[in-house]
Length: 116
Image (cartoon, rainbow, N blue to C red):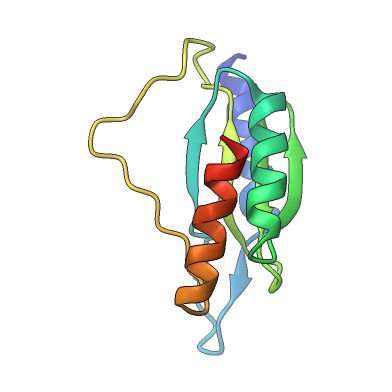
């Protein structure tokens, strides 16, 4: 995937998911993106897992899918690496998903374990 396509994707995401606050400030979305070497398998996993906390696919572009919560704001994305190389473990990476309570955390954890 070349740089012009990447720039176009980011522009589309920004134009689609930018909103204004009451103070008139523009806020860009905040989300975590992870890379994958098998996008189809990753989408199957995250469709099921994130569905447990009200997440669903919000935008699908070549090589990247953004998920949004019930409020419609994107919070997570899974993508093939932009440089078309292998997705690898990121040193110091951390992903934090919010949940309403401890029971929801336990349910999400068990679902992830069940999904492998």
